[in-house]
Length: 298
Ligand code: 3HC
Image 1 (tube, rainbow, N blue to C red):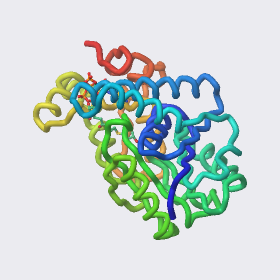
Image 2 (image 1 turned 90 degrees about the vertical axis):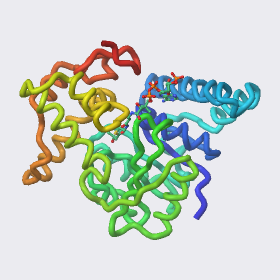
Image 3 (image 1 turned 90 degrees about the horizontal axis):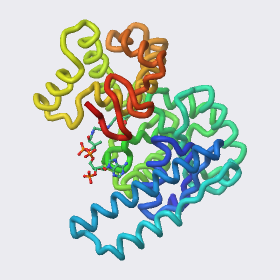
């Protein structure tokens, strides 16, 4: 099946990026947000990111200034915002990128099943929940897939395509073709906790934070060690701040509850303390580090 119109639910950190890369790839995109302020903020972020990428393309000689400006304009025109779920009825693919709350996601998919045409593929960008649970709630498990993008979506070239036992070959093929056209390299993965990346990345962050909690090394030294010793673009503690300490904690809480016998899933004390105090990392301006927008300040 051909995907032409894409719905994105949520215009936050991940949703705005997914909407942007889909529109830049030529898809017609409708973004749903309940909150008017959040929708406006997300659209502004899309505009700023498109301008930044256009500026870079011109600097590198990949596009003329006029061509870059035209492509920014065309991409923006392909995205519309809405507060009505019914505007997603005729989408070929709907990608959910709301808060990591399984109950909220399940209720959303029940609503979407009542609204969208039977052809519509449903996808979740969840970081941590089993795709199978949402697929069952949606009442169309054969047309349900996990599409996990990485932050920042505009720059990270990977998408995990997560398959449950119930998903049809046609849906997996169409979803894989979609992420590929969005400029992402797809990797296929079963419906296993954390898929590939978070299953490896989150325990790395946990061990880094436990080292800090024990006083073995400072956050800056842990991060420098992993950048210079392993070639990682960001150290694990900077990355935890970057993706959000609240997000990291909520992933871990879900895993600890669902998989109590898995020794890799533990919650560092300092992570709980930061989140309880509202220090979520980059998004709140303070976490293990201080942040000014997207930049660490130290
Ligand atoms: N759109 C457009 N441009 C952007 C942008 C965006 N969203 N975000 C950053 N940029 C630009 C910057 O403005 C900068 O432009 P400049 O060269 O003109 O100054 C350029 O991209 C490079 O950014 P930086 O100078 O800030 O830094 P880096 O060269 O280090 O690149 C990075 C940034 C790509 C984020 C790199 O640090 C990196 O790869 N970090 C690791 C990110 C990572 O691991 N992400 C996965 C997280 S896990 C996840 O998402 C899963 C989830 O489920 C938890």
